[in-house]
Image (cartoon, rainbow over all chains, first blue to last red; front, side, top):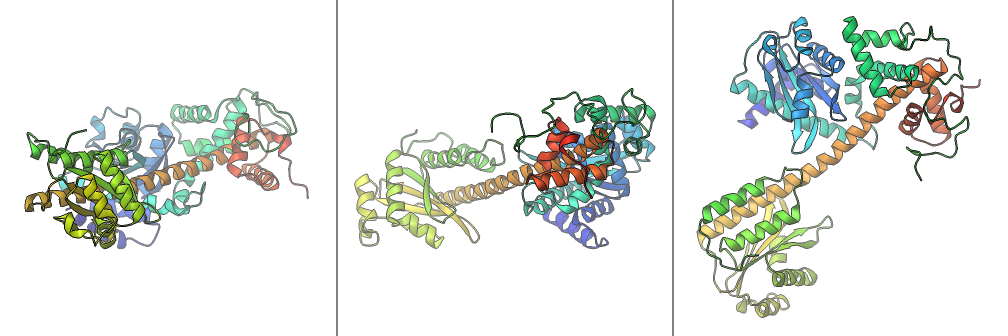
Length: 261
Length: 250
């Protein structure tokens, strides 16, 4: 049974146009399940999810989830169990995400944690345009796709040298790069940790009803600042950051902290 | 620790519990030695042997004593490993069960092991391989204080226990490998995010583009032979400022 489902998936993957295996897996899962899209997300620090690969609609949902900091992949990853919402209109789990996902014409989602024992890497999320519960056969295929996704990610990353992210996974997560850059700028403007800066950026995007990506573009284009100072007039040597100041000359390489070597 | 040949009220339940424990290798605090020690004790409790020892091959392919139901068995197994001689060694090398119903008859086969086993008080021994298809991980030794073989049911149960133990061990190795990849993946992702954040921090402080910020950090990292991720971490934490990362001189 499990073997048969995996074979079906592999066949469907083989029939997809050439591309990264992760993307083909998402497309194959969506095709077999009659879904609008699917996305593979990888978790960072236990909560933030970064996109690994996704079909178009799958990516939209993943970006929404990244912007709002809540959603099926986050819940599936954190709880470590399959999450199924047959109708987003009736959902109480994600009060902010559910209506936003419905605005993307999505009504049902299933998310599988990429999990083996205590290992948790992220989630594979499949979404449908129409409401409805999945039957056993469909859940079986979805579970199989989740297992295959875990195997794929592990296999792709296994041969990487230390500190290097597999290129395909890095490409998949590239959309968050400007958002992290903008978070860095905001952190410098306000003298707050970058994590706080990302939260502020998310809050602003939500309040303005704009996307995180658009807002990040504004920040990076210096058309939007988060501090009260007017305009980007900081000179090349300006250091508004009130953090620890070691002075203009750095000593020998300090490793990662101010502690003893 | 239970003495040998303890009567068990419900052997079937104990057998099932052993299978469940063997299948439970995916839990976070799974410990190979605990697992194999429990297995050895259970085989004794179930009445399949007077005493049990379990050996696994290390990375170099040499057998190591991982568990024993009793200390004297532990010593006997160590002796086997050191002399590279005995039923367990043969079982591991051949990948097949070695059954000796009467050790007295096997003095020539293992001239060093046999007298030692008899001295310890064992008259029969069964060595069962822990193997899955071509992979032999080690062997389980069942020592008996009475001569004779295992009946068919006991033989099947022992083989099943050995198989489940093998699958558990293979799974655990896989999980261990996956853990290392997971840590590596998280590290790589965090480095990547940290570099993006640092670009933004430096771009803001120095009033330059993120591309120029990246360029400055990269030149600094190369010049000092430091990792980009570490330099980025210092920029984000404020340990490196704009003065430390000079612009390019052309």
